[in-house]
Length: 396
Ligand code: RFL
Ligand code: PHB
Picture (cartoon, rainbow, N blue to C red):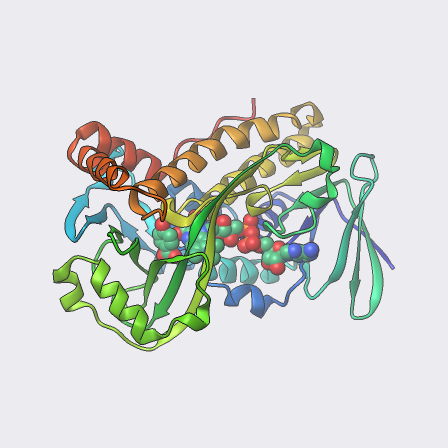
């Protein structure tokens, strides 16, 4: 059986769902093809910090009501270096901007609900998704669903299928321009229904390794620990996690930390990756399918949202004004922002983590760099304006 749509979207993560909703609201037909079930997608605990641009786009997609109600506005963020606590007034140093703490799971759920209300089509539990003739005027997608082989004809394909997806792999290898950096550690995350230890997030550099105190609400906390990339989840348990966290955060915070059962514990590897070939023929790579950043700058989901914004504005120009001449601008506009976020995420990671290869000299330089940034007006402005998100170029 063959279906037809204007934009075929591969992947129902935040990129695919956000693009789908924006297109639907603009009257551009789209179908999402997702490998997993909706429950599986909602079970992945990931991002927590939304930039203003991401918040605005979610509202434009009609999925902002619950975020506006429940999202926590953060006008500052905290740092700790070897147990010494520092507050950074993000609003003061970014011209009055802030970030919103609202979980990726909730964003995804809101977008799924809105899509259902609008009658948007998402085909979950698909297998063997393949992209065909992406260089031609008649690209199409084939997949298996409920034991049947199906085909989806389309004008364009949006590859929103994450780092391990099939979209990027459909571009000929000799056309891919890729850059990668893998870090020798990962983040062990723990979610618990306990009140957050601090009213702001706390990024903690410590000789035992980095730790992050984050949250999802006033009753739900999210904590992370830097762990060697060789660690397995079986090497850890809740007790060991809480003990280690208390050692890495400021002592006063450790005293008031409320511990509790883990709702989720998992390890994520850290990497920086950019595929500069973000558009090839009729295929557009969006979000994690095109780039990965280590989570230290809270940029992954926000970069995905800014790709979505660029792709969406482009599709509107194409369908409403026939502006196919703007297609090459897609990757130019995206990459200008991607590389700046890649830089910031790499810098935050380098500033705050313990690298196994670091010497005593390297540690002193790291300490001096932190000291400089946190005590200088220029340093604080630098962190704040990157943290709230840099602006996006116009398509034309
Ligand atoms: P996703 O979320 O990976 O979704 C891709 C979807 O595509 C599906 N898929 C396929 N579907 C069909 N056929 C195939 N062959 C397919 N292969 C894959 C998958 O099942 C999935 O549903 O990519 P997307 O939509 O681009 O979204 C990107 C974000 O998820 C990611 O950037 C963020 O989570 C990164 N991130 C953070 N970003 C922030 O902006 N702020 C944060 O605070 C933040 N914290 C984090 C993070 C990521 C983390 N991990 C686990 C990597 C914290 C962590 C720990
Ligand atoms: C999170 O709450 O999951 C989170 C917050 C800030 C980061 C990374 C992850 O930089």
